[in-house]
Image (cartoon, rainbow, N blue to C red; front, side, top):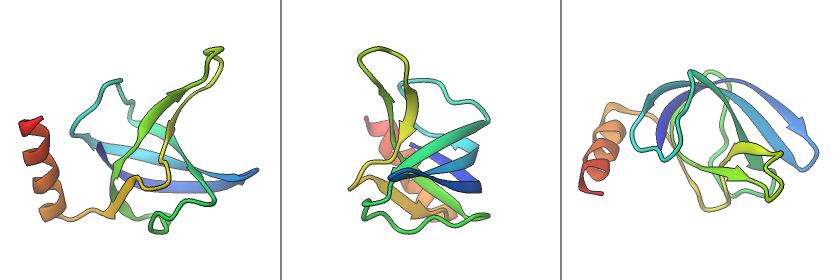
Length: 98
């Protein structure tokens, strides 16, 4: 779970790749760097992400069996909400209880 700002987006096959500035990480199993690519299937029912927008995103790291692909994936049904101070407070509280 992290707070990020969308810097750019690019359609790649059946997915959209978003370049994201990571503003804050709330809960993570693998480290994030200041800029990451977030991959979203074009069939995802997620709210549309727009360039310049800030969001709270719950995504997972996807590594294939050959370990040649390592990326952050926002799956269908994943959490993507516009960032607000209230949203950030709720995420921080939930992360403390986990």
